[in-house]
Image (cartoon, rainbow, N blue to C red; front, side):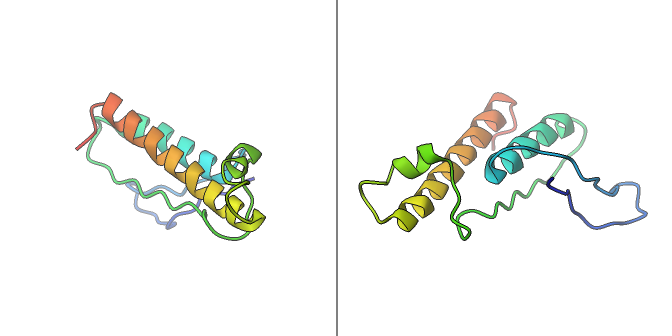
Length: 106
């Protein structure tokens, strides 16, 4: 389970965030959840979204498809690190594409 976190406040403009249960690679989960939130927030009023993934750093855990991209070019740990960067880059690309599609690109 990945717990949502934020400043707990009695201010109704910033309600407490409740934990949600998620499955998958955390960077993918963070970006997917942020994109879902942006789609619900758009058009209501200006919003700010800050996505702070824990990649790329230890523990060096990444889907095999990303590690394989660098397996023959670098030592195993470096291939995982570079794979994490590739996954992060892919997620940023998806986010930018979604923002453009939704008319939120600036």
